[in-house]
Image 1 (cartoon, rainbow, N blue to C red):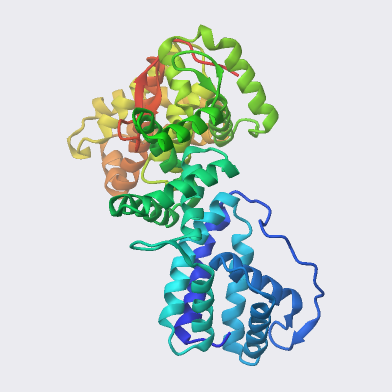
Image 2 (cartoon, rainbow, N blue to C red):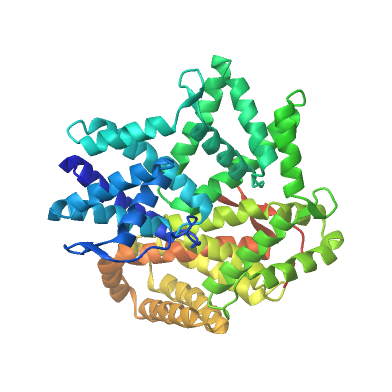
Length: 486
């Protein structure tokens, strides 16, 4: 496609951005592959083939939501044949084919967010590319395919209806069946008669665009949905006089039916989220690998169903909130800021792999670790040999607890703590020398262990991981002495 250098560069930039989406859940390509020959149409690096023309055209049709006519497809084919005479244009067009291959790996929900984001960027670039007849032709083809269905600022198009409907269904995790599509379309047509309603609906569409640009991709999208969804449903339930809100609440309830009645009830979404979280923490801890397969999720649902009535109210509440907890844990893990991964493992591992209740050795080791951390915070020049010997005993307890745990990482940790104990017993001069050489590194390592230990102490005191009030951090919330064991 003959185009300005800026358009070619933009295509390459999109390719680099697309790498974010390779991490998303793989899914089959939503477009049907056309059965075409792969005859070579033009030499080059690589040669242009018929299948490449089809992929390129189908990708443009999907991205810009243009149902290309046979004549329009022939024009794109002619563009590509012309492009294959110039290496720089070949490189530009190949970047689009690379994007097509990357985006095809995304799940349908992810592909919709990709399209919302990149369509806006590509269209803006096409309109600005005044020197390229091809860019201007493609922009005109977009306008022709997106005629207004209602006047307003901006005018309403079928594409806007489609994006809005998909976003609402995604937020609420409800199937976007035809009756719901029809209702939302009618709602938007009615809204476009009132400037205030247009403004509200455009905020929703802009919100979708903002979320499409989340830097952590699908994991962040799912986390944000988990925070938004419950508040959104609560507000719609309260909006008794709005039939559209009540219809959406009805669709939500139908899609989130309880598998056990109660206050709160248990939903399949909650039991599935607990299975996902359980397997994730178990696998990260080095335990025998376990995937959250449909069969495993069925087992979790059955076990929770059978035992739900035995759980105290606070336990039921914690389990009912599992979709939000799992989304937060996954997001925090991917974001990996500071000590979040260590805190996550320390908070959840005792739940997934609970030890014997009232493990006095573990409690003693945790308390010893806290004292050891406080000791390392002191100026090494101010400690005495006697204090070093006392601190070494605390370090011994920590090392011994790691040895008891017995995992590969635990053994490595034990060795580090044993080395610290030997250093303390070597006397003040040697301790001061090492502290001055490795103070920052050693303090950071001790800080990590201390943070993990504080959470571990909380677990031993019957506290379990929860969400902060704003839904952004892991906090500890009271629970009963019993926890589900699978």
